[in-house]
Image (cartoon, rainbow, N blue to C red; front, side):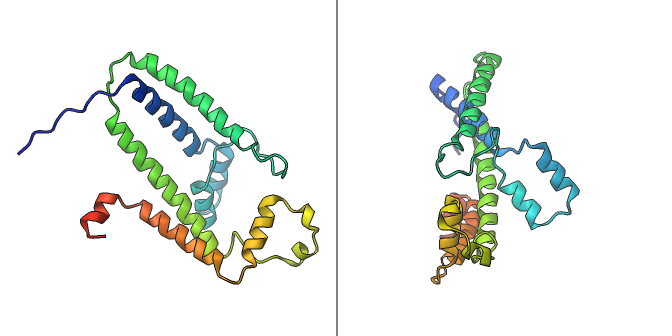
Length: 193
């Protein structure tokens, strides 16, 4: 019977990178919007409220829907990175070199991100499987000038009118991918998959 070996201490670069990524992913993953929680609290629990919670994106700056500004959504990532850098510096000085590795915290971060991603992917897959996200064009869509559509609306309409069944196939693959994210690789390989 072998004895467990102690964990190897991490280098300073690995500690810095872990702290930065840990805070960055938590800032982007945990909903901080008070209005979101009030709307969920006041509404009966339904698929819509679950979809709002599971697909929530942290937004410090409202994102532009204009076609000419494709990179405005990255401001939120830069703000989250700035918060993560500040948090990493504070964490470094608060720790004072006592902790040499974060293996357990790294494991919990991986589990949290995997479950968060699985819930988001599975709910968007359900929305596509039951054509709610990409519905067929309405009469007003047919009477709207092509140049008046936003780029996402053009994609949604062109994908929804296909006859090859792309939307349900994409939804089924997203739902399957979300379900598979809930199972670890070792669990599947132990059962012969």
